[in-house]
Image (cartoon, rainbow, N blue to C red; front, side, top):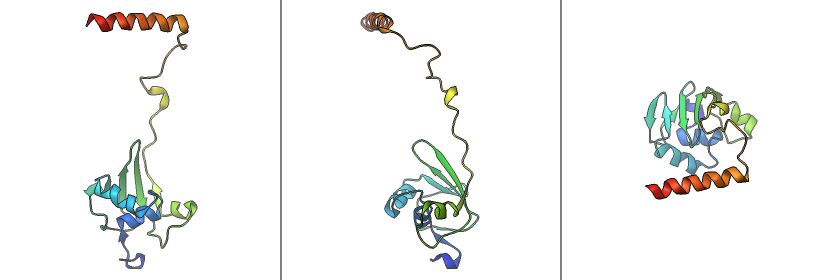
Length: 126
């Protein structure tokens, strides 16, 4: 199917939109079940997408939500690829709300040695 018919292969559109570096990686992303079309999971890289479809793409650290504006004719530069979709992704989580953020100064050498002794005692107590 070509872009003139009103639809385009999913893997080809992902490649055109620069979601993946190669079309093979786009196919693998879809076959791994990481892409949804209009909230419906798909593993078929040849499934056609149309203007107005919403793609939800799960990657390692983030979730991308793209609404398709255009199908594209080629894999062009980023500014051209960016016009193929509207980014409706949720904002990234706030870095300050992470539980691993230390609330005080970094322990000095003496405090680190004390912590090491305490953890060694607790380790042998088990």
